[in-house]
Amino acid sequence: MQSREHVFIAQLLLHAWNKGEDLDLAQLIGRIQVPPIRTVGAFDVETFYPEKDRLKLALALNNLLASPSFATWIEGDPLDLSVLTRPDNGKPRNSSSTWPIWKTRSGCSSWRCCYPKC
Image (cartoon, rainbow, N blue to C red; front, side, top):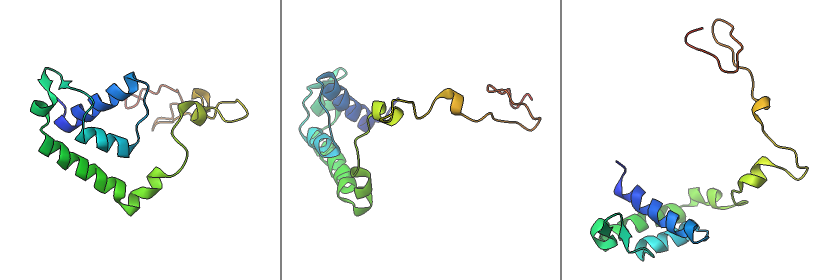
């Protein structure tokens, strides 16, 4: 079983993604306070996660967002898998053939090493 916070945030993210919406942390905090969903599983939102508890979660995430040490995580390019895996020249940045061949104590060089059986 997962934590109530995890389930609730996962439901909010799923709802946004199903609608084709992107969420940043500030928008997620807003949706925690005023959820766009009515139920979580079989329970209505208020039963599953009462407003006063949602406010505590929103405040905790807001502290993270407002923290100077978190600022570096907000800056930069958005995470886009297609950009991360294919640079401008069209060649993949990584592939399974670029991984090193791992060696075990016995010297096995199989890419699917049988350690600790080696």
